[in-house]
Image 1 (cartoon, rainbow, N blue to C red):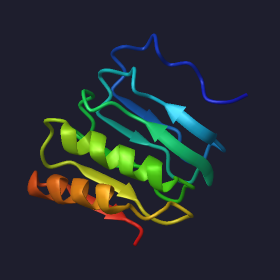
Image 2: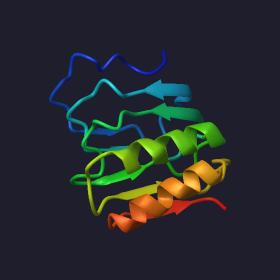
Image 3: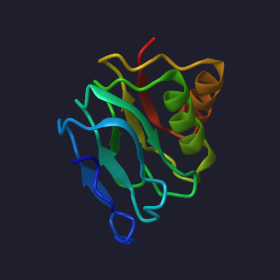
Length: 123
């Protein structure tokens, strides 16, 4: 029946929805304590909305590999992560039909790598 409403779970720090058949765009930007997530293998997931104020990457991986993320979605994720204060994270946006980042996303990758992040994307 779609993605569940998690907005009341203010202390939630990890979600794992890999291979759950999620489609369209998921907005998890209100999960202010979220440090990592796994949306891998949702082959019809086209977008994940996050916030630069979330502590994403602080203590775990950010996985959205083997999805169908649009170029705008990939760029927005990378830009939001580059704008946060977290160092040494990891994000995987490879495989499936995930789009390659644009020049904007590539600039964000440079920022992330300068902060010690590991970044894997389609090229």
